[in-house]
Image (cartoon, rainbow, N blue to C red; front, side, top):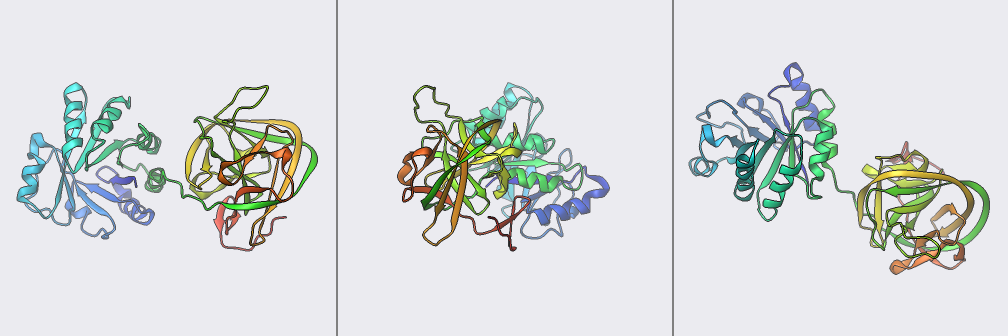
Length: 367
């Protein structure tokens, strides 16, 4: 789990509102140079004292973590020996090769390393993450805004363990927490039995081109309703007459749903460059991938109806062509135009209904 910390030292008159929002959003830490800011925080929030440019207080009050600048406050290990009631972290400002090495050393040895990179490049952070890859401590990197936080969480795929950000306004703490939630819940796939296929004429279908390679047993879930989807395979498997495009899923008609970020559904027609979709493999394991573009063209369409053992149904309308494929049990790659009643495909049958893409417990009938 990625950690989201907010810095309230410079937020001004909105401090109380921002702190309350952060608590409600589930932010893991609040950092201040004033112990009074930490006194009334709930036990669910880490209380971080960072007296940057100030002497250490004689007592640390409610603080759980004290971040120190060794040049002014002394070494964290020495301080921890004198104050076992709190945890200590090291602050490093990275401006050159020497301070970069200090940051790498901190990442390897300290329980908490608070890192401030002065240059906009993320190469120094990559180096620190690599240097500390086998260490037990946590790297917390300062971000200027939520957009930078999203980048920091993804550096070297591993990302920083956490981000510290000073919210500019109410709403930023919630956005930071959302950016920290990089994992996508896995889904429970079921075997669906095809009950009917039909040629339904012309329409617009969407190819979803992503900025990543798919695995051979991986694709995206697509369905005509939000409560029944079929796993459409990526173009990672060889085809006659054309090269493989392992970043693409020939997904379905533009009205179709797919899973995006935050367990929200999106219409294929809504996806644009930069959108997020959920890639799913045959075991239900998921990851978020970035859309590079969506290619929408008029094509003949094929409708596939399928049913689960419990009677729930799914429908998928996709391009009516032999090279458009879905996944079956065990990762079998099935040409859609050859599907017939009795064949098995992999699908996903969410329990919740949807409102503007979000799961919600209400009555909703789709047909």
